[in-house]
Image (cartoon, rainbow, N blue to C red; front, top):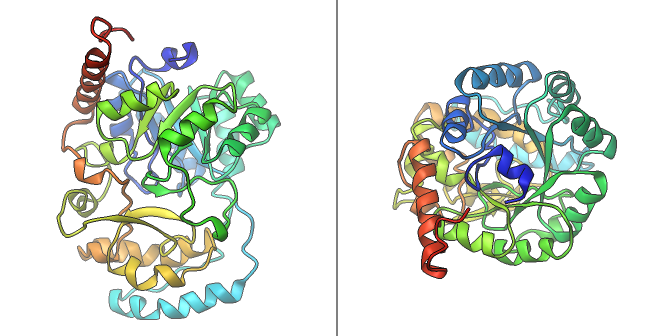
Length: 359
């Protein structure tokens, strides 16, 4: 690993920041304590809510950790398309006996307020999704001593991150669960994402920044593969989602290995942005009709998703999952970090006898 990443974690294992509750202080602390890099997700939280979780996490570990922020999004111009989708979801609102949300409930996810808190009381790492911050912002974090990471899905986005002054890029392949972290949401490119191994290689040949690889990784052997392709560390989300420390809903955890859910797909059904999840009834019935309107559709369906969870209906929930979800292991997070590192070292040893324990 690059020296800066080595200072942050003993093993090249990063726990993905999963917005929506999975990435709670308990999970992040367990990962960091075990030698990985734990992350909190600030997305969908208020600035005060984010800060409260940071304080909780600091009380659980003295090891480095990260916070992930969502970049503000441009307004979707076609309001009528959102209204058409609202009408399409009227039956869901009746079924779950809950009103649809206000699509205009907010666009910036409290970005500026969160920046102010994190610059006033710095944390070790801050990462960004759905775009790249300005050089002024990234320079301010550098002056505060915070390591910055920008999520990218193409070599061109990686170049933008380098030009803007990011310390590293998180390279997200099409296999990743949850939202695709594209900087610009273009419906014309839906499903055209690049596989992780190819993307890591392309980014490595395009920019001079440390690379954290993300997308469908569930085993130490896969971590070895992305490191061999040029990554400095691997980021795993779905692998940690099922851990007992994870704040994910129990139905979501169970669905990862439930034979009822046989595959994942990218969908706009729940949020208006492409996101990979287990195919369920809601996705099948509404995915093709959802407009490219984020966060409007996220706000619109938020109550439906919460109501489905309350009544125990996984068919109405957003079951975000990477392509490797069937390999999920119900292990304590710290133990999972150790198992993954053991598998990584075993793979290294099998490929390069005598060098298996070289980090």
